[in-house]
Amino acid sequence: MTRPILAVLAGCLLTASVSAAEVGAILADKSKLTFVSKQMGVPVDGEFRKFTVNMNFDPAKPDAGRAQIDIDMASVDAGAAETNEEVTSKNWFNVKQFPKATFVSSSVKALGGNRFEVAGKLTIRDKTRDVVAPFTMTPQGPNTLFEGVFTLRRGDFGIGQGVWADFDTVANEVQIRFRLLTAAKKG
Amino acid sequence: MDTSPPTRYTDTAIALHWLVALGILGAFSLGLYMQDLPLSPAKLKLYSYHKWAGVTIFLLVLVRLFWRATHPAPPLPSSMPVWQRRLATSMHHLLYALLVCIPLSGWLMSSAKGFQTVWFGVLPLPDLLTKDKALGDALADVHQFLNLSMATLVTVHVTAAIRHHLHSGEAILARMLPFLRNKARP
Image (cartoon, rainbow over all chains, first blue to last red; front, side, top):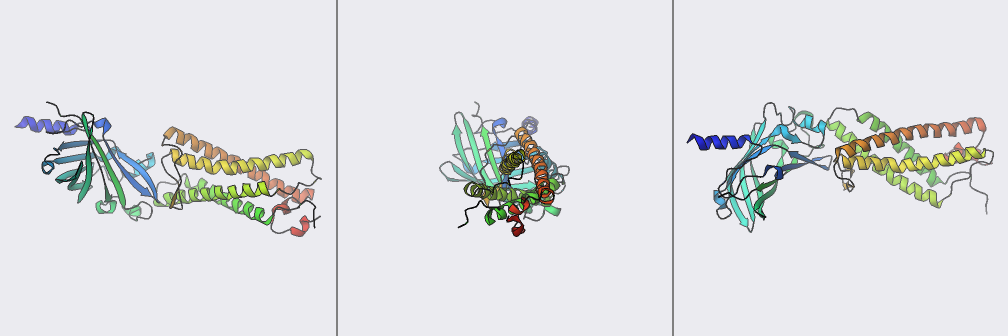
């Protein structure tokens, strides 16, 4: 029994990986985890460059679907060098103490057509909150694209403390977008 | 009916001139001050105020240019040597050009750096450029160079106006002042 466990562990260490029954390996260079924050009313794009995905999804049995996403918080690109320095520091992600953020799904339900909804627990810093994200599943040639958007409130996770705790410069709401491309299932 | 050429700018032109002058003095000082601040909510606010001021000045300048095109400037006194009159006119044209180019360069720089300009936090201006760090840095240099040019030209502009007023005894300064009206009349 140690071998499959080792395989999963090894998979987790890669930049992005997938252990799936119905969809194949995730295509890391074509998958993106991005976010939009609002600074003084101005939307600013950001991105996490390193994350691992472990998912299993069969549209015929969405209830059995599951996903875990681990995000390397130090891989953030919040739009500018000085912003990256700030956002990884103590008041924000505090990457020294909390290097990883994790999403673990608890349920997936079908919304009709190619639309689904995943609910789960998102842990950032030392806070775990329930999140719900609608997503679509779209075939792209031999591959499959999973795409979704949801909004979190940074205040719920203690992201942006001290002088940043006020929401008048950096808004509370942060839009998270995921775009995960998986290869065709092998064999 | 008085058909002699005007000796002063119109009241509207004078108001626009001083509004823009105040605006650029404020935006320029703020620009100098804010750029070396460490990242903080205050810095984000100041950058936004600077951009809002820039957009406002740009719009005022457009109104000014329209007004200037439809309301000729009073001729420079014939007591001034021709070369001085030519130089003064070129100087004014260059100042107008900078008034247009400086806000534009700031807007483009902001766009290239990936920060959209949203006027007063409400009205988003289109991003004319896609995010490109090298281009953003180059445009920052352009914005800075244009501003230093503006600071230099404004210094010359102000010095020349005061000098003509004090030493040459020509009614140059009074053309653009809301007061000193009588002195401007020959």
